[in-house]
Structure formats: structure tokens, C-alpha cells
Image (cartoon, rainbow, N blue to C red; front, side, top):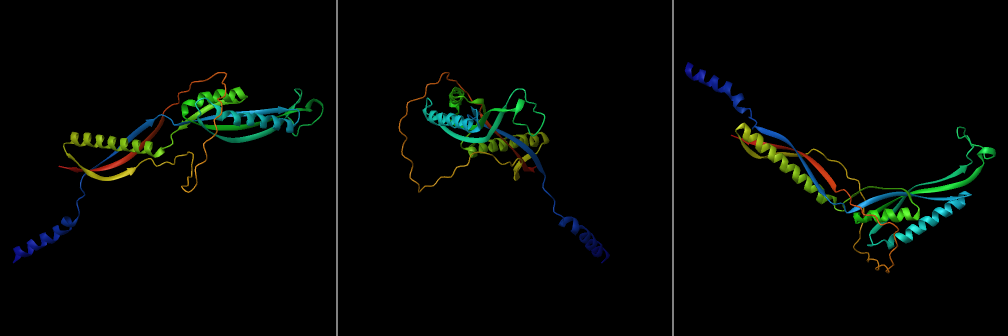
Length: 252
């Protein structure tokens, strides 16, 4: 009778320990991925300016330069697709050289008499294909654009590039996990958890298309513009990276 009671006490004492669930062993790794492809388009930045004795004359000169640009872009050799966007617009007075600019407001007579005006406007052209950005820059400089520079480019299908980087990151995580498991003398089990370690918004051009809108008629052929100095341009490839945290189970 005493033996039976003692056995029952042992079983009762062991019950909580048996009830506690044993967590299976796991391994956590962080994989890094990278994917790149040639740029589809390039972004060309520049400034146009107009000068005149009065602000209206300066604005008129700026408008004429912009009209010349608008008429010339479709005539570029190779017919690249160019999307023109404007940015900062500024109209300022030009004063005599002897004017002391430390005071404000400036007087409009004497050494600070207004002798002219300058109107400037910033622009950005999205050039597709990106390789035609050099000729576009040459055209802009030919028309009178200043501060011409290419600020990079991008791809039209961001998802494909992002997906390739993510697949590369997952493959890198698996490679690390297999190496660590083999070095530890255990077998790598199934994936328990996958976490995107780098979720960042992507800035880009947005477009909306409607299937019920008829396509525009084809443009009339125009003679190409004559570039004084054609430029070759090879854009840098567009690169995307990804990081994932992957948890694998381990088996004996």
C-alpha cells in the first residue's frame, strides 16, 4: 500500500514536467540578396534661362527657349521617348555692379539701379532608352541649357528586379543555414518563419492606364534635329538589394 502511494506521488510530481512542451531546436539566419539590370530610362536635369531689360522681356526669352526645346526633343536621332517636367521657376532683377547687396530692401536708384532681369526654370527629362541621354544632354546644351547633369535612372518594372533580389536573399539564407547545420552535426529541417528584414517604399513614376481609351494616332514623321556634338552615354545598371530573416528547424 505504501509502495502504491509512493508511486502515485512520483507520477503526480512528474506530470507538470511532462506537460511542459519542449521547443524544437531552430536556427536563425539573415540572408542578403542583390540583383541588377541595365537602366531602362535616365533622368536628365538642366536649367533654361532668359534675359532681358525688363522682367517681361526675360520671361519672353525663357518661353522662346522652352518652345525651341519642346520642338526639338521629338526630332532627336533615334526618336527616344522624352517626358519633360518643370521644377523651380525664378524671375529676379539684375542690378549694377556697384550695388552693395548687404542691405535689404535694396534701393532701385543710384548704384543699385535695376539694369535688367533674368528668368530661370529648372527641368527634368526622363529619357527612354537611357542610352540616348547623352544626345539629349547635347541638344539641351545646344539650345542654351545650363547645369546639365544626369541624376541616374531606373527600370520600368521594379517588381521583377525586387523579386530577383529577394530570391537571392532567400538562397543566401539557406546556404548559411546548411553550412551552420553541417558544422554543428545536425540536419537542416523545414523553414519555420521568414521575415522581410528590409521593407522600404520605392519612389518612382506612377502611371494610370485605362483599357477603354483608344490609343492616340501615330505621330507625323519629323526630320531629325542636327546635333552639333552627339554624346555617347552608358548608364549605370540599376541595383536593388534585399535582406530576409529565416528561421529553420533542426533535426538530429
